Amino acid sequence: MINIHKRSNTVIIVVHEIYGINRHMKNVCQSLSEKKFDVICPNLLKQEEPFNYSQEEAAYQNFMENIGFTNASDKIKSVVFDMKDKYEKVYIAGFSVGATIAWLCSEVDCLDGIVGYYGSRIRSYLGINPLCPTMLFFPEREQSFHVDELILSLKEKNIEVYKFSGQHGFSDPYSPKYNVNSEYEAYNRMVDFFLKH
Image (tube, rainbow, N blue to C red; front, side):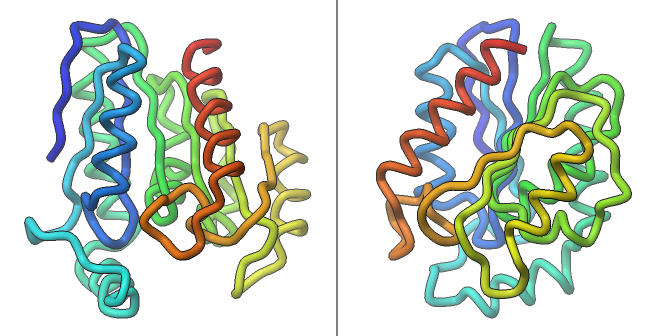
């Protein structure tokens, strides 16, 4: 778990990808803390070391078989409830499966907002109606579904949705799918969202 306290009245719970708390997640936590937010990144894996990108299939299988969306969202919800007594504002920023987990937590009424990066499995949970401000980022294309169709469904719920150049993983500087312009624009939109709400 990453736990960075700046004595802020706002905490951001960062929810990692299938790989665990890797360099990318550590960078996100550090950069958000530099914006004067307290940051927590719980380790949802049952192991300390993150998976490498070359282990994508094993990491995905591990997540689906040993963790799962329901179990992971229950864990994050308990962190939200724990933080609500300690902070004026509690937000979630999720990446990939973490974005879908954030989406599953968005019906909790004590949450102040969520931001999700390329939560492709959100498409399996379109019955959810967030009770908090919600902003989602998607790449131009995904391998397993049509991004524009999902975006249309989400916009019907009055959710702020943005599509960026690049592929799934565009905000990760350690990924071959990194897109520096998309990462920069998405990150700034996320920080503005936390400051605005």
